[in-house]
Image (cartoon, rainbow, N blue to C red; front, top):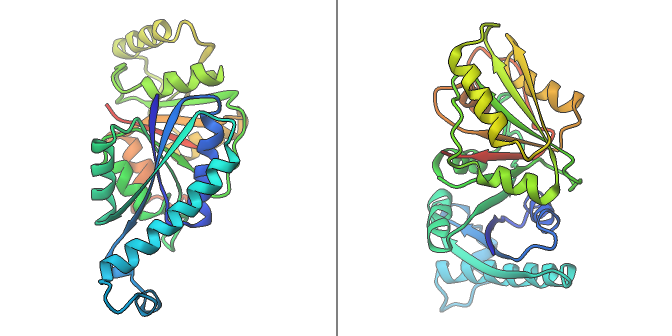
Amino acid sequence: MKNILLPTDFSENSRNAINYAMQFFNNELCTFYILNVQKASVYMTDDLMTAPMNASVHQSVVNTSKQKLVELIEELKKDTANQNYTFRAITDYDIFTDAIKQAVKAKKIDLIIMGTNGATGAREVVFGSNTLNVIRKIDCPVLVIPQGYLFENLKTVLYTIDDNDHFNAKGIEPLIDTLSKHNSSLRILKIKEDDIVTIAEFEDKKELKDFFKNINHTFHSITNVPSVLAIDSFVQIMHVDMNAMFIKKETFMERFFYGSETSKISYGTRVPLLILHN
């Protein structure tokens, strides 16, 4: 049984990510923990005015959150009545990433699924701050669903690596699970700075070929093209349904997610991103 964490702020984006999760795990035994995080800085006067005189600020906002979660879970139960799904509500009053970290540890979460917050003015914003912070600070796989993206059969999954990556099977289980569950084909894309093939790269390719021997896979490379543009183009040309990558600091993946002062490319991911950690 899988334990899946679904953060929600009750927005359309977060509900869309939850809907994706319901279809992604079709016919699988899962417990979904639906988490809403509140903090004092977002309290509105109207929220406090509706609270009973003897209720604290904390009680007022948390009770409202709990009621919304109850209503959301009732809707999901009706929509997924034929599935082996269990739903649990979590309301927290904390910093967002701290609440996520606590839930991951306490509930032994296998995967976090959340929507993008959308661009907020800066051209190089890929995701909203909450999503980016979870990717950077939480040591748990994250599946990020683009705004408005509807579930489609995962016929083709992309696994993106760069010159600094050396294959390590640690942390790759969510990708293997996805490929196996959806019977997907795998495209392995290496983004290179030059055409030189090193011994280490040759050995990595051999390891990858052996590791994925039971999965329909192909190798591809793109040289001397900015990572954002390379991935975006490949996704469109190869009709990719999901992109998986390990996130590590000081690699082009960092630049992909957080941008650079010189980059002028504004990128919104076209397909769900599976973020892996090793």
